[in-house]
Image 1 (cartoon, rainbow, N blue to C red):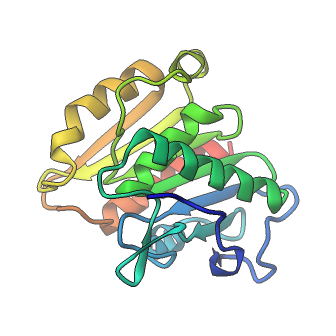
Image 2 (image 1 turned 120 degrees about the horizontal axis):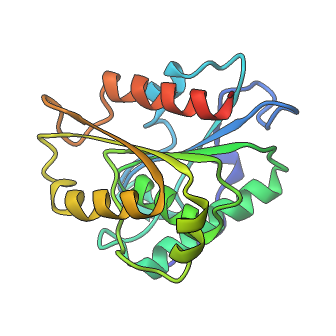
Length: 208
């Protein structure tokens, strides 16, 4: 399954200008498989929108009336293409620094992969019921030196993430400054507590 350029008209912005604001950080949100740009609204609503701008993107791969960033198998080559599509979009809107990336489920895998592709472009990342899809890639050596801050949270009832949990934790510990949280009564979802914790983490690093 291939990806293409992102649809700029489908971006859900927190700002009426539908663009980054000079001097304010940008948070880029990435939905999961069979999702859309509205899926991360709980995170958007938890962020201080008077001090930063949020842009929630639509994945380029159509899936059953919704969208994805890659096939369900999430091959590394697909993540590479999706990451570069997001970076191209960032370049097209002239986004300021710093930039934070927040991804739910498959979007979390893309967020992690973005760190590997261009760690200098992303100040911090949040994996929301997300995972790392490939154990080792060429960009990991650079990432180990940079060690960006990353938040990772998922529910203990999340059967989709569970097979990736230990590998994701090991990878995060080896390559990032990770903060990991688990939520006892949550499945594969973006719950309110997770959204608030991720928003606090992103705000703390982007507005420090």
